[in-house]
Length: 103
Image (cartoon, rainbow, N blue to C red; front, side, top):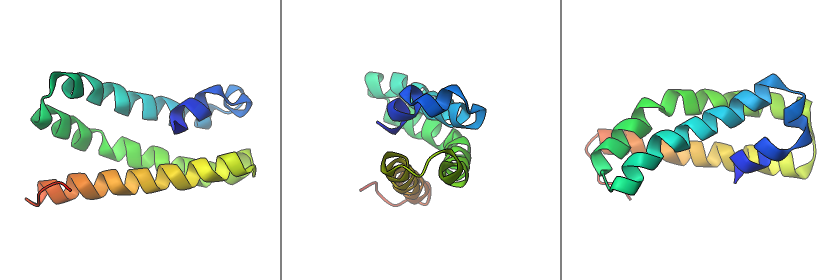
């Protein structure tokens, strides 16, 4: 939902960094789509881990530029939601890498 919001907002037409965030979110989802459809959990986790640094960087960039782009509640909520999502994704991937079961 955050990616769709960013893709279709007027601000994205004018801001290259915001478009980069949206493209990174799309790239992350695209990379996981094939393994998800195939039910290949190992490949899904491998791709999720491989792309995690780019996802974290996009999150950090969005948190940095969001106040400059717009102070509208929708943008503030998108920043909070993206940060929470990326934090949870990273936590799940890192706990799996450490041998803990995913929960």
